[in-house]
Amino acid sequence: MKLIDYMRAEKLDDLTMARRVGGITQHCIRKLKYGERGPSLQTAIRIHEVTSGIVGLTEWPRKRVGCAPDTTEPRSVA
Image (cartoon, rainbow, N blue to C red):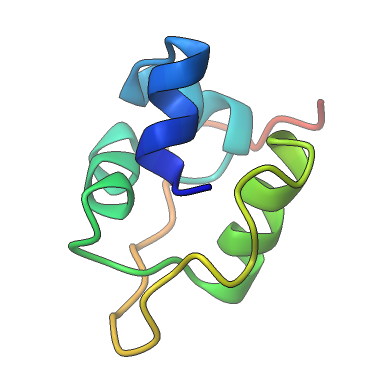
């Protein structure tokens, strides 16, 4: 399942998803869910983990550049 579909099904906004993933901004989540950017490997794995594998590791475009890390908040460890 794509990130955008997962977020719609779970009724999650960008900020909430960014906080669950940890280490990225809501702006980055927006770029990821619309396919404007691809995640770093670490971010793709974290999204896979926080979605219980629903958003698969193969759902991402291969030629895109990842988002910069969010340095404003500590990463969650949920």
